[in-house]
Image (tube, rainbow, N blue to C red; front, side):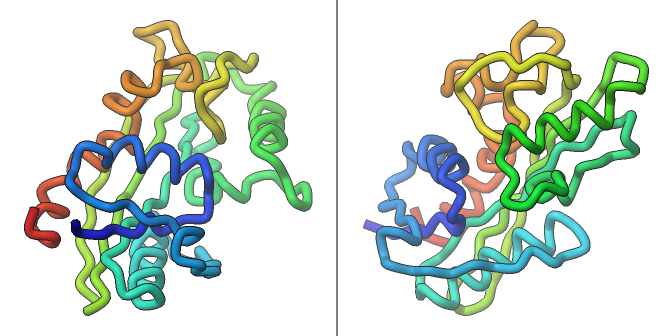
Length: 199
């Protein structure tokens, strides 16, 4: 069976990507599975550079085709922040997801609602030979001041799908994976994966 390395140390992303890719005839590997201890510095100027760098470095280090993503939350009232720096948004050392959510809400408290926003994801697939392919996905909603739901990570509990009346963290995994930024981006990578892995 073909093997694909999920190029991240973020447990939340690993779980989501495993779920999103489960219907492909692939053996999904994590860095933990192959004893690969690799931290990639995300110093790119955009999502594509960061995702590409992660996928490339994990593919080079492991010898496996690797899939990585870079994603962010872009809030209109904050001119697109936190954006590329979503995972590093809080100034607090060793900040948790909760710290980042609280910091975001603190920065929004004087801005008029609705706090419209969207999540963006760029997926990169890299081969050990150095080939890289990309796909993207976006989903749209608004930020709300209270946390709701437990099925998610990052900013999911305060990101509301206005038309559904539910936050990302209130959705069942199957529904979330159909409409989330990462789900849409992965769906767009399936043809690329099938070509690269000859599925």
